[in-house]
Length: 171
Figure 1: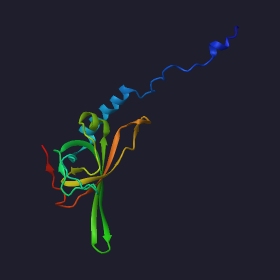
Figure 2 (figure 1 turned 90 degrees about the vertical axis):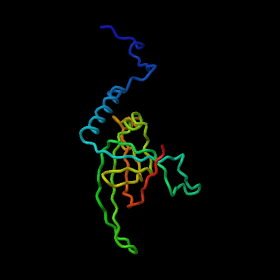
Figure 3 (figure 1 turned 45 degrees about the horizontal axis):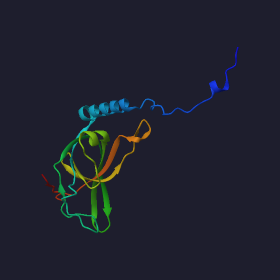
Figure 4 (figure 1 turned 120 degrees about the vertical axis):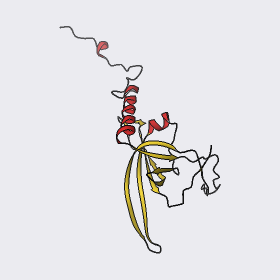
């Protein structure tokens, strides 16, 4: 039996890296299609999303807050909503106070690519008959472990007090 030459068995680096295993463009599109169908037709809930019109709203130059916010027309979004219930707090000088929170799990690719919508802190949502303000955003999950392909946006929201949210819409 003849022995192989060293040049035949030497390893050489390929010019281009191989495509990612099991997680190419087709697989990402399949995951999006399945998530869209499940969220919109089977297990998702509807929320109305009220994006703030940052160009027309008059923000304070120092604090960045606005007394009167102007909103675009609301957008219906299907998402997974986790209702965290009512929490009663005892404020020493003011008495009892209740706060209600929800977590909304948005499908990122559906929002950004199909609806051209970007979730931001400070925007409002209507869930059921109550309004909530988005206070915290997270992107906790990567698709197939690929950090550049995040597919979920989680928004933590607090219920706003009655008569606090009165949207004025722009055309």
